[in-house]
Length: 248
Image (cartoon, rainbow, N blue to C red; front, side, top):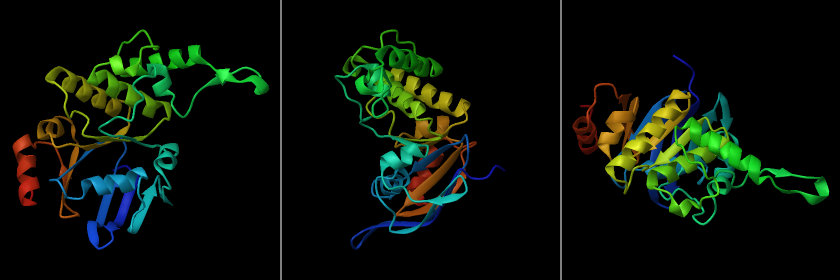
């Protein structure tokens, strides 16, 4: 088996006297879709905040590519190849597709004393990132607010690709989407896996988990209680494990 890309050992997260995550060991391997599931309050959101760099762990260690690390912020995690796409996508709705893909990493041209945005190059490269996801949108000047939910997810994923993220955390990626848009987002995640990228999927939709996940980790009362391959598991099996904390 390949060495883990990301490893957590004894990770915990406290908010004062409240223990949100307790003593979690977790290995994340290259190219897998690892679903992290659990009821509300199970600790999965707090665990993801630690992995994404949004919050520091109260205990334990994180190892990335074999070296112990401590993410100081989400931008620090992103610079090290760990991107997080939250449910709200963190897109600027009135800005163009290209501007959103390159947000925080804009391309410029011209002499040092008169730098300006290289909008044509950003448009070309943004279009290429979307094409890698099999999403065909010709006009990169379109404001994001005019896109469908599935297209917006594609723009957020393209931004992660722009940073060459090897681990992409997706928080409830199909929430509030219709059947057609959900199918599009599931295809986007399959594209990421086909490129060898690792996806951490947080979802309450067990059908999505059963369709995508290669492995399932179940959280309960802040602890990881199940960690097993997803092969052969259906939505009802995963739901049963969440309720009981025992393998199906």
